[in-house]
Image 1: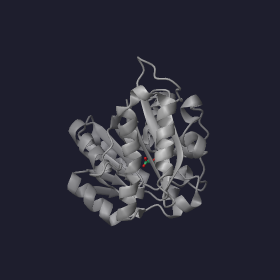
Image 2: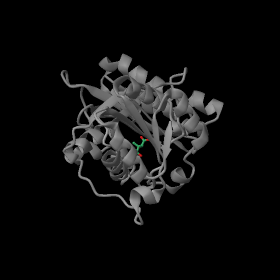
Image 3: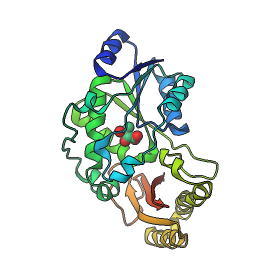
Length: 277
Ligand code: PAF
């Protein structure tokens, strides 16, 4: 496995790839089984797998979240090596941003208006800024993104369209702990007890899927009450949305695919999850 810290060397190396396909897995490190599934998918579909590890400062709208974001480079590199990743790109801010660490302004329309777009102002501009830079450097055939960050996934698809690029964005289903909690780098900050309590978020999503016939407003009430009963969980939003548009729906629409998305805090740690119906 090759490790690059600067884009010039990486680009030079990638120019030797010729007509082999490049699979790309962008990450912010703190790797868990969810990331490793993305690597596995890339290995199945592409000749060469590139993984980036970069905690992107422009996508954090909360300084505390940024400073507390877990970082574990040696551990990550070991996991990637074991998983058969070919190339790792681990740049410093300067390599990607030069002297000015700032986001480009994008217009993703309604896709970025609700949920993460509403509660994390500027977040998607930061994500799209760094992913565009990474796509331009790595020029993958396929880029792999987890469904846990469902709205991000749709934003990236829109970004690729805006770029006029033919990168295929491949979604990969969420990996969960045995209690249902979605795997996330932020879970590392939860206690064992916290992880069990936080699994209630997924249990609520499963309840909604099973009881779809109860209607959206009833289901929202149920989840609100159930999560409020748990004094360590603070619900930020529960939204029922059209899967493609990421816009809220009030009633189920027969033909469209939908999703239910939740963001909640457990002991100050922000968790998101969703279920697709
Ligand atoms: O999903 C993430 O880990 C990040 O948002 C990404 C896509 C690596 C961009 O920094």
